[in-house]
Structure formats: structure tokens, C-alpha cells
Image (cartoon, rainbow, N blue to C red; front, side):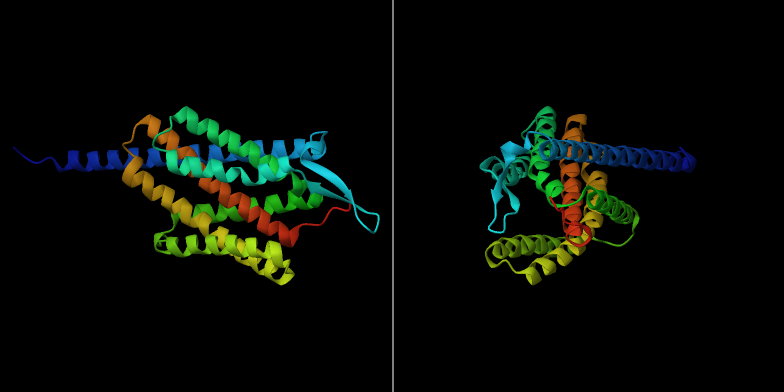
Length: 254
């Protein structure tokens, strides 16, 4: 029986086309969930900062010079640290949770993050927050696109980037006690560079993981892991935004 090379080539091209279409659909799903998370975070942050809900999360303290400063309540401290529990639960239980549970955890995480970030709207002017958000969006989108399309192997930098994240966390915790402006500036500079690089790295990681592990996965697994990947990209965006705000933000006078 003759070997039909045309049929083979057509089959390969059809398989590659299906893989590319599936990858594009998966990436759209990831970024749609990320965008939804950011929207929820923004709405909740605005609601806490600009409505009567603020009284539950911040209390006014009169300083010695007569000025008023808003300090976080226990509820705000809980909102600041509780997102770690959501991230840990998704990281550990992603294979055990149902898709609906993963979706619920991500949405709850986004809302709690909004409450934890309400202080940003109180500390900085609305114009500077909007300006920084725009700059962050351009940087994030450009690096994510580059990471998705580049032929360079970014996976080899993964361990260094993770070490950098832990370094920033430790330095930030130490600076809570040192109150060093120089260390704070250094952490902000490294943070911008680090999370810009992580954006490109994660975009390529998501692409490779889909091609190698998820292209033939069930709809349930694809639904769960798209949210997990959205969480990673969300964290990259939020951290990049907060570090950029250290440079571009104008402090609020209120």
C-alpha cells in the first residue's frame, strides 16, 4: 500500500492548528480571569476607601502636630495577610478542588485583595494611581507578549526569579523594623525589575505547560489550571503596580 505523504502533512498541520487554537483560547481564558480579578479588586478597594466602609478598616489618629493619620484596624490587618491563605490553598489543593471551588476561591481572593489595597487609594492621589495603572498595564502587556512569542528559553531563570521574590519578602519584613528609606528604594527598584521579568517568564511557562500537559486535558482541569495561571499573572501585575507606585505616585494630602 502506498504511503500518502499529503495525508500525513495535512494531519500534522491540522494537529498543529488545533494545538495553536487551543493555546490561544487557553491564554484568553487566563487573561480574562485575571482581568475579572483586577476589576473586583478595584471595585472593592474603591468601596472601602470612599464609602462608610472605611471606618471598619481604618481609624483616625491625631498626631502631635495636630494632623490626622488613618491607621489600619485589625480587620484591615486581616485583609492584608489573609490573601496568603488563599494563595497557599490554591497552590496545595488545586488538584483536589473542583473547578467551581477554585473559581470561588479566586473571586474571594480578589475581593480580599481589594480590601487590603484600599490604603493605596487613601495614600495616593487618584490621578497618580490611574497614571501608574496605565504605565503598569503597558509594561505588563508588553512583557507578557514578549514572553509568549520569544524563542529564548526563559525557564532557566525560574530558580533565580523565585529566589528574588523571597529576597524581597525578607527585605520588606526587615525594613518594617528598620524604617530605612534607602532599603525601601532598593526593594522597589528590584521589585519592578523582578516582577517585569516574572511576567515574561510566567507567560512562557503557561504556554509551555499547556503544550506539554494541558492540550489534551479535560475541561475540568483546563478550567482549574487557567484560574491558577490567572492568579500568578494577577500577582505579577499587582506587585509590579505597587512597586511602580513608589516612584510615580503622588502622596495624598488628606
